[in-house]
Length: 462
Image (cartoon, rainbow, N blue to C red; front, side, top):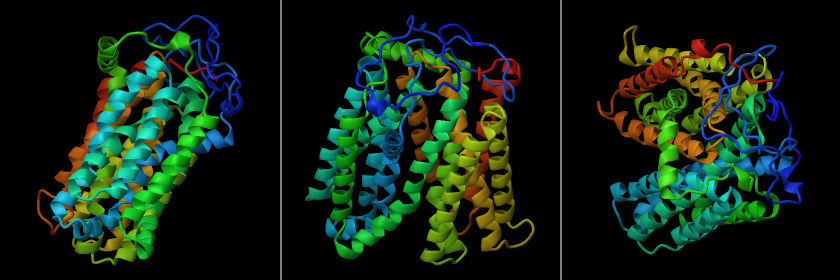
């Protein structure tokens, strides 16, 4: 049974790219300002759900083009970061600067994406999704073009910061759009689909960046990113209509946005899912930061072997995400899937720590690569589940909730990155130790704050 006036978890949605009205009409009373948990029993899974706003369009489905567009928007961060990585030595030489200063171009972009989400999220709850997204993407295109034209490293760092701030619009609003259109299990499946699309970006971005350097200099990378940003902006303008009706928007100013964020952080369960996802991502980012050094310098693999292993791990992440979305969702509760994912990450990190410390002798490259594969692939169970469960509790502020979910992951990732090198450059122990600590913290936040056993009878209606 479903509650009157609320969309079910498997409510499908008509192609929003074909909707003639940019502002869907509300279908009922505006939702309350705090999440209400509906209780019912599913046939094969139980999980917590916040009441869906009754203003959500009741019969809409994203078409293939819009699905690809949302996936492209979530791929903006890895494209902006990873495609640029092979160019760092060329930037150092071309702009006559030090390697440390050139690294600031990465830090600026990452910091901009973290802060930008906290700005764009509340804006999208106040003005709707379409307008802030278009503004953000236009600024992203301009900033990326400035990167290509930068005559010195100072201007490049500033342009990268702006690029990150503006590119955050694509990350946070794409998640908010999914929350507007889907609920419950359907939302979990859609997030798994987005992972398939955006998960390809980390695999191909460094390869594309390396190939560009064969024909032009580092500025060509930003020229290509400018073209990609322009295409995404045009698609947003032409095909992505408004998904948040006026009745569901927040009318307050900065004070209201701060109160909304404060209320989200005060929600113990939401905070638990947010921290769980953030610490899980930190374990993943520790791998991304340390794996080039660990695989190539410590275990003697060639750059080609490292690229192959990195690609295989990324494919594992995507495939497990698809297994989650196509097979597990609807049959196994999201909390149970999340538990399995966190336990697998913790076990893989513990195994890596044992192998790296040499307790049972020297471990070769293959066992280390296998442990990293299990750890990274398990994120395909964790990331969609934490995003879905967090957004399910926040129909009244999907933009702000999406911003918190995104910002927390970027901040935790930026903290984990330098920690992996604390103990020197001759052992993989720091990487494994950071990964294990992050995995245990994620599992602890899930158990202590989310307390899934207390909400076992609360379910999404299917």
